[in-house]
Image (tube, rainbow, N blue to C red; front, side):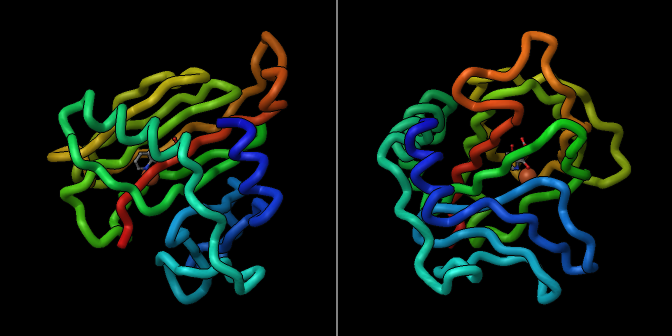
Length: 184
Ligand code: MD6
Ligand code: FE
């Protein structure tokens, strides 16, 4: 996975996108697949081209597809065919505020999420923003599949702390999260 991540971020570098409200996100983001997730003053959406390069996003690596399909099938979502992978890099102190993933066309498809590097405290809320979220620690190598009634639950990530064990030898002093989606 790491080899493929390096390949993707060489072609489509990680960047801090702005929210529609004009705030810079603390997380650094890129994508691969037929479409990629983009945020700017015009809103959140999926595009066929990287707006930084005006070129198509890098292809979805076979290893990402295989992992996503295997995990989805094990969780009861046989036939999942993702067409996009969002890659987020968190540096210590960065976070993801509570949000719903609703820019995809089809909420019947699950999302497969892969955590690498530093741990995170994941907030898993309800269908309303004010529902109190539960906290789950996500470790290097964890894969989470969510779909069905959970698909639109609010969620976020608390500020990332550096690990007492030091950085992962491949990943470095970061947390990476891959989310594989059927977006279009
Ligand atoms: C993260 N994950 O783990 C952020 N969204 O860093 C997400 O925002 C997310 O893990 C939709 C489905 C699964 C996820
Ligand atoms: Fe999300």
